[in-house]
Image 1 (cartoon, rainbow over the protein chains, first blue to last red):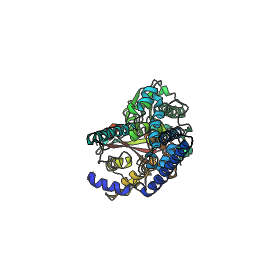
Image 2: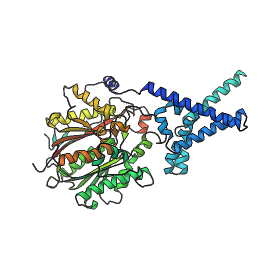
Image 3: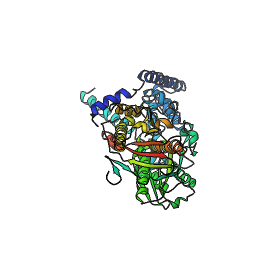
Image 4: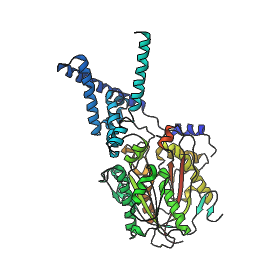
Length: 146
Length: 342
């Protein structure tokens, strides 16, 4: 075929519809913002029960993680995420979904080699580089003597 | 002409093997698609009442083979050979489906081109006299393919507009010899494709990766046989989807050949654009089930006289994609004709 990869790439770009960025961003903004607002409501609730600011924040995270895991199990989370994209991916609920979904999916290979081994297949890199970055940041702080 | 070969790569089958019977089975989404009513059996439960999706795919394949064999009133044990393929690592759906049949078995892997590959290999075997009754079968399952190639089903990800939807389906054909007058369709030519790679690395745009392979094989077949696209009632590619189909027409238009009037794609036929499948269907089961549910019946009753099935496959693996390799693709073509003896 007398066609270079570069020429073909240009043909492919002309024929491949790009993602609808504006629509995706509006969805992400609305749903992501909605999750954050829900988080604030949950935080106020925990504070009202008598928890201090720090404990109420931790309880809020736990509640959101639990809710997201529940919605993942009920196959609701992915239906929202299909439209919301980063709006459901970035909040802590996205992290919960990324751990709960492989845990559920791979249970057919058993609780050890399936659920446990595959649980962090998506979230693993976030943990590795998140914790790695925090170590580097901590060392900088130590050396700067802050 | 050298033996049965003509031109660059086409094989003319001297005693065109027949397609005696066929069966297509599908899942819920396939049932809701435009071809839903034409399937021989559909399963609303994605698990097919099994315990894992892999077992469900095995079940789809078993049902397709037994229904096709039943239609020609043959026990499965009367088959000389089963040629089967699927998308799973080590071709397990096919091997587990063939387990217990006690029929010689070859597992084939051509990704989504597998149905054309198994038909072509089967036709050569029958024409060569190496077998008299061959079952060609291919299957795919959305859930088994997703977890192998992409993400867990419940993971909240977004699919790009160029992504395709793996069909939950299987198709099986029983091939017999040229002497079988009861068989309504015959295979006259086959063309095994070459691996083509024009550097596409986006695993969510497989239509684009496969279109050059489809062009290459179809171009070879047409020039080897001295035919023109309009000599066929239809040229059906397997699983190029919307994007790949447009690219294939573009590639032919560079040669001043317009195939758009006769071209259609199994990935576009299987699902409706409203079914949220983005660029269309894919998977071994897509071309296999469209062939068995939609194309073969039309050839059998004479609504179509001669068609090309050119099923395409993207031959990457999750590992090769992660290592940054581009996606090699292949297309195998089979010429199917309606009717009895010449």
